[in-house]
Length: 350
Image 1 (cartoon, rainbow, N blue to C red):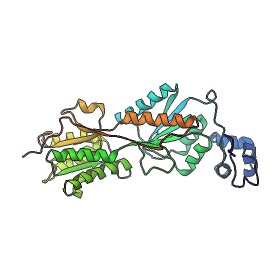
Image 2: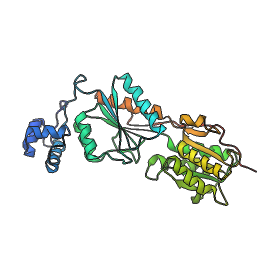
Image 3: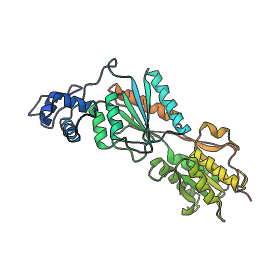
Image 4: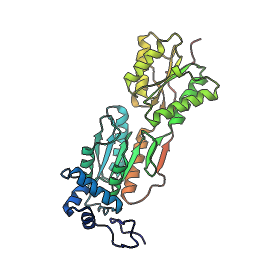
């Protein structure tokens, strides 16, 4: 027999058919009912050891708060970035807002200051807001935080996961390996054999996947992978500039560079110009993301289009599906990437 939504059961339900309630949790934890309510609502005025004891009983009893009626729950989506200062983030915001507008919901923006896990204070504020759902961009939750959101019936989706996707956690991303493969194949087809890659941090799965695609393209063309030509930046302009300057100052410099983001490609362009190299005459460059600026720089940038806005819209639609108590058709969605050829790539100099 199914358990009514909004209640939970303990492992000993066969002997104790009574569903968990705030009162029973308070009795088992040895605290008052208002204290349990404060913990459920993320109130900060609860001692840490008391909070931990109550959370433990909530998890053991598998308590689930009743799903709030649409009229009583704020129509909010929390969009949480590990970092937010770029046009890349703007594309994601636009995609989420497009889906939210269709549901007449508002979007709350947060930034974690480069961290990949929310701080306790931020998480308490989130529980107090009780949004319809949460979208985490290049960020995630630890097991305790996941349990707490599940207990409060607040669904969450990870967009462009930083690490390996957690089992049972809905995730939206893109085909990063295919993108790296297509970018490198394009350069090889033009006749380049000495190709460098500047990807993002090794801690990010998308960064590693793009490098794996690069390696696979070289391998299928029977070209060796030179470890000195594999660099990891930070996805921002300075990372591309610093690594680009180092690579292009070598006596055996590469004739082409695949940058793991459009911003890093811009940094490589600046380094090339400072060294007196022409693009694409002396150096071919491929970026990644296809941000609007790539069409207007000189020369226009060949890049891998990552459907950032579509990814964001898909993640938001998944949150709304979960908020209605439904399960999405797929918990892991990777959208296709596409190579956009412009004027920053050409055959290598003879």
